[in-house]
Amino acid sequence: MPYKYINEITSPENLQNFLELVDLAAGSGQDVSNVFELGRRLRDSPQMQLCVRAIQYEPSSAEMLKEKYVGPDYNLDAMLKMPKGSLGWTFAKVLSTLGYDPQFYDVPPSIEEDADYISLRILKTHDIHHIITGFSLDNFGELGVISVITAQTRFPSFLFIDLLSLFLGFFTSEKLYLEATNAEEQRKTLKYKFDLISAGLTMGQSAKPLFPIKWEEGLERPLDEWREELNIHPVTDGPYSWYSHPALQL
Image (cartoon, rainbow, N blue to C red; front, side):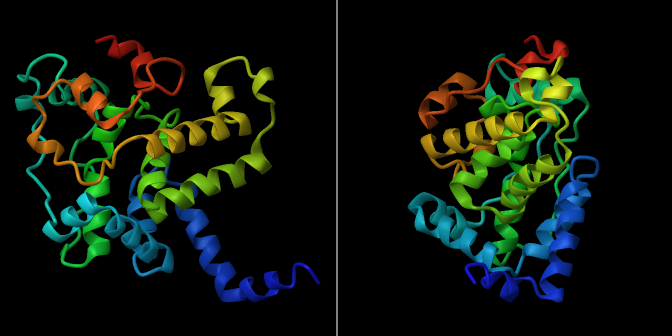
């Protein structure tokens, strides 16, 4: 039978693990702690080892992994005093306006192991990546920004969320994109998810590696300068751009 391999992977144990991961990933949009737990569940997985290898393969990322640079916490008050248009000022303006906590990420007890450091660094810089790429910080743009990092690192939590969003969209999409009358309806369609994930993957493949960047040491640099250096063409309009948010007309 051409599909006999399915019997080998659909053991009761594998199916149970899959369903538990689905439950965590599906709830990540409502509770960020689900993302942390998803990461813990995948910490020792073969998929995480592929992520580590992908990061080790790129020389500057490999150096960052050896150094295990963390950097200071984000101080929004201090960053709001930076030059207007700088990465730090823009980051602080967007997060403070929307009421986001810049220290939202989960801090592991130790970052000695590569997998723990990678998870911490990717989550700590996640909102920086939103600012750099232009993808909105709400559900409209989340798949885009995690796809950028997926393209560059194969980070398993983000990869799983991407795949699951398409899988669930197959069952839950009730309208075609062209039938949707507003952004919220568009977001629920498969075309929106495909377009958003594709945009993120394309951006990630075209950009220079983001993992080894010590953003904390370059917050006063102009945002446009960072984007030019990293070959990032940000999303600046449409429902999945933070530039489109009514409160963020900077």
